[in-house]
Length: 206
Image 1 (cartoon, rainbow, N blue to C red):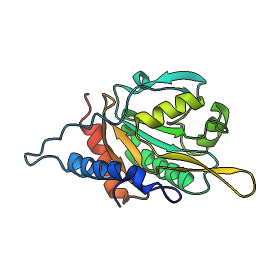
Image 2 (cartoon, one colour):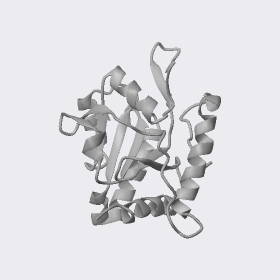
Image 3 (cartoon, helix red, strand yellow):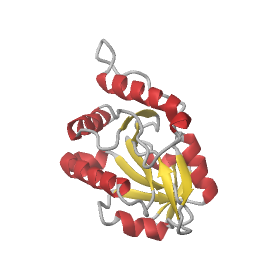
Image 4 (cartoon, rainbow, N blue to C red):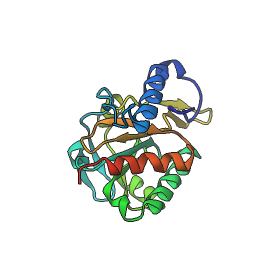
């Protein structure tokens, strides 16, 4: 499936419309129009946000990511498999891109602000690549970004009294003007993923 894959189950109806939009934008944006040009980005996904970068302890906004294309992955540090798998994939893309990786922003955004403090996020992401920025915030800040980016995220209570999180598992791609242009699906073919990243880099202003 080329759109969003959920970590657990359910909520398909809540994201069905987005699945169609993302699939359309992802395919057509990266294929280009009939004349080989890029189609216009979808303006309804993305927007202002205020979070804390765990690697520096500083507050950041969408303005700090402008000027370079960005790849945002939404997850949480207690995630048992999807999040570490995806971050390992991002790490491999960064290594494959080589020096060109510095022409992009990569960020891991927590959907679990109660547990994912900036320090927890910093230590978790440090196991992958320092160029992946660990972003977290208050409940209100997190909810605002989730809403702006049309991300699915829901707390699921467990029988032992704890909880886990259901969440969208795609990586959201933004151009250098912070406009949404498509996704990389969970466990997407590495060649396709790299082609999307290189297209973003190649089409960014020099």
